[in-house]
Image (cartoon, rainbow, N blue to C red; front, side, top):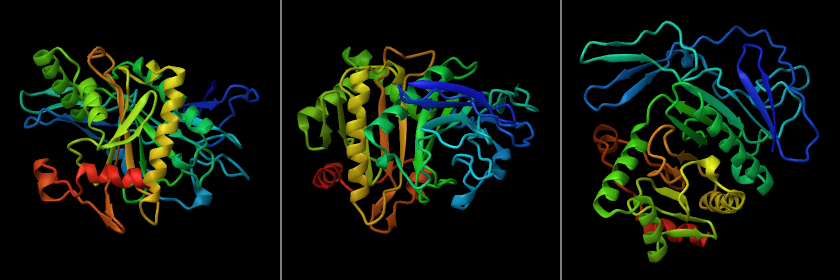
Length: 358
């Protein structure tokens, strides 16, 4: 993989990524007249749950569903300047113009009165564009294009892991208007959190308790159990297994685990990355064939925290959709939203069977 680093007009970092053997690229100049982005994000600690809640009011002005000819993630062409100051690209990552967490936060001081606590939301948020094709999707990428994106995720995970204040690196994709995306161009994001988020913390705490009780790794035991049972397995390959989790929350949900424990994306070998691409594109294709329109989804990587639990964590991807039927969505209503108690719409074994059949 070839990487070319540059800066946008307001000082934000941008990196172009090209497959090996591509013509050498030079960082293109961003000629827009952009004021420096001022982030005023803060984190407030919820004394009832112990969770940190980010407040990023400056994001209210972010771009929302522009027409295709005004897409900020398309290449800069025909006199129109976008966020990518080049006429073409294969994959690109850049600092978000409207970040929830930023390396430089102004106007927020840390304070703690014993009940209420506030801190600057110091971290990093990046956008990753999977392709220059505005009408494309991850599912429509070639294996070579998808493999490049995997390498980008690994590269940015390594870079953000060395960013001061970052405790957890989270690459993810939101796809579809039903999910709430504000830009239709095929892209994802990477958050560098200044804390370990609740989902990751809960999984690691459960894994720690399991190890103390049994001496074994919980993630590894789950993989072994799913492979032995088989009823929820969607794809079983040389290096990866994709299965509907035993206690799936969502109408469609698939978890992807490497069969050998690694803590994060940079730790994946070449063969493991190639095999993941085959499995992931397979499952995304199955998602899109279930209904008459492409499946909206969220896909998020669970990796080891930066500074803790590397011996405990087991890299995996969690993919899920809120679509529960043709033209029907699952809404997080009273039980889910108010109490965090999920009620599943479809048995996990039925989910897996449907995905295997398509």
